[in-house]
Image (cartoon, rainbow, N blue to C red; front, side, top):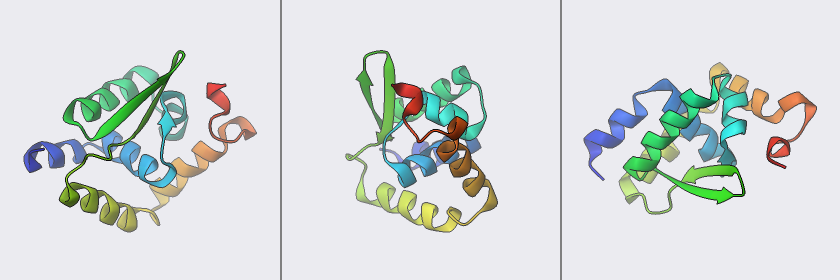
Length: 115
């Protein structure tokens, strides 16, 4: 992975917010990210596709559902960047709001949209 491409991916707010939620929660489906970030499904899917194409995330399909997680194959330096970024962002109001929307999806726990 080229550092320039990695940091370019992180420079977009939608991709960064998605990655930070994955860093926090592990695997998330598209519908969870759509609810958490309060953005349209096509926009979320486009950004997730870019992260997948760069090798930053991995995809798992379960029926019609698509789940994303941060790749275990990231170079150590890239994994550390995500870990340190998460430490710096987890207390921010925007991240707390994203997580709150994720955990409060219509009063249901995460994953309820996928079952």
